[in-house]
Image: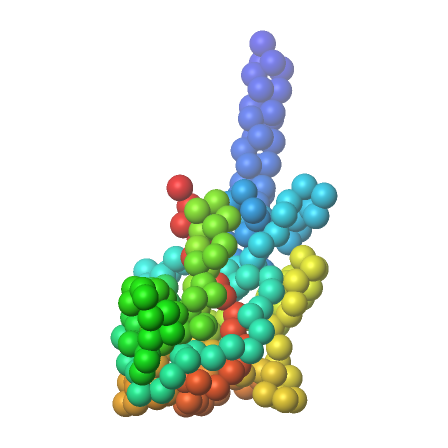
Length: 233
């Protein structure tokens, strides 16, 4: 009986030791994790292209100020922020808020009458209004109820800070890495943020080469990189 008790105690000790030494399961989402078409997020070590369909790569973990954020695998070719100047499109103008989604809604819903109607027999026709070509390219993708949008200045700052992690994963997933080359202004990306002091005419550009910002006329054409929030059910 003593021998049996000793064996049981030794076995229990081994189990407890094994549990103590076992790494805890990581339930967090980190930069470099991959958002798939079914809404699942997987780590690069688990990702299998035969099983998963990647759509975006996480570049920022969830905080008390925003959800986890992921950047889409491909980018928008050079496009204008607005198709006319002297037009306030009602974005926040904030350089610190993570409000790209709200800004993009403003870009899509704020219009200005054209100088003359294009479709004269239908005033409500969208072609009779000045709009945001950039904003109209958003909200097209709906993977597992996730909609893409144009990031704010602050959100592109988060992306810039993790590019060394994110770009290799984008390439692994078959996407186009975020351009960091200053050649031909390739590193400059539109944000969804108008310049607060001149919202009628300028919006913020963000450089993925060095993290700097630049005020640009809204009718100029630059690249854009859309992002999504990860909102688990």
